[in-house]
Image (cartoon, rainbow, N blue to C red; front, top):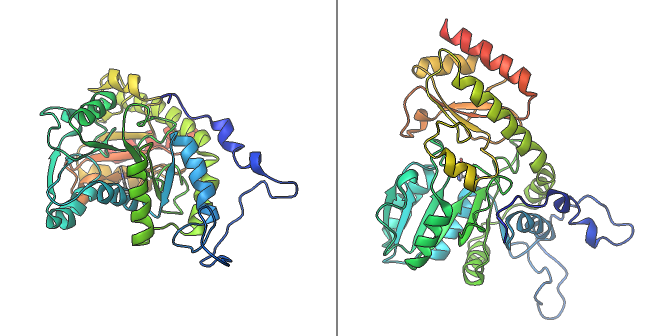
Length: 371
Ligand SMILES: Cc1ncc(COP(=O)(O)O)c(C=O)c1O
């Protein structure tokens, strides 16, 4: 499998390829719990809404095309992470989590996995390979990490995890398949919160997993069916629709983020600017090698919490929200959730606004926040 970008043109025509005359080009929604099921159940025939649904199947074909592997849709990114962890781990196993990645998997592990006899350890993303992976059954990797945007070498880490007999699980939420292809770089499982850029319009929660490993894939599918961790037909339909514009949105967001990060880095009154596309990012060379784009997230250091809040309040084109990856530019002080970042650190998620209008609004708000 290639680590190049997925074929965005083929994605748009996936459904059309199997249409009969008179069928709609756009995907219909099938909200159904029951399906006609005379006689015996058969593989490939929808039977009950917790087991399968035609709208998910279409969504999973699109997700599978993007990931280059069979995919399963989930009702949130955390549902996808939970499926990957529970499909992989059993009592007595060791799990390695990123110390600086999205915090909820660490809370989940503390709250539930340790009680089941799983030992949980953490390491910073930039030093993930230090110490090796002997004895770990599963390693969750998030690169670039949210919110610090640190990066680890996916090919190196996944090869080492495999050599040590473990399973590598890559959370690709901050990049999407158009920015990074973890399976091509050796991951056993890739997953993402599709609540972010894949959904893109801040109106749905979703997630997915994908894997070429039939045993892991089967276990995650069983987890979904048995726990009922399924997306609704409507959310699956909405995400399918959003995926059709993901490449367009992602490219625009990355172009704008690159431009804005460079201008912020040279601007008086702004502290550190963290962006994998900037030459002073500690893993810039690695980012250029393993990522197709540098992403749409920028870490921005302002003087303190008050300055950061003043900036957000002063900018009409930056919305004060948690989460990221939508068409609207948003920003958040991550220290308010307890992330290990300074009080004045903002995670800026660049949206699809025309870049000059966005820059003018950001520049004016920074001036106002400083005065
Ligand atoms: C990197 C990362 N992974 C997973 C998640 C969880 O996704 P969801 O909120 O869709 O459950 C998030 C949410 O912010 C995230 O940032």
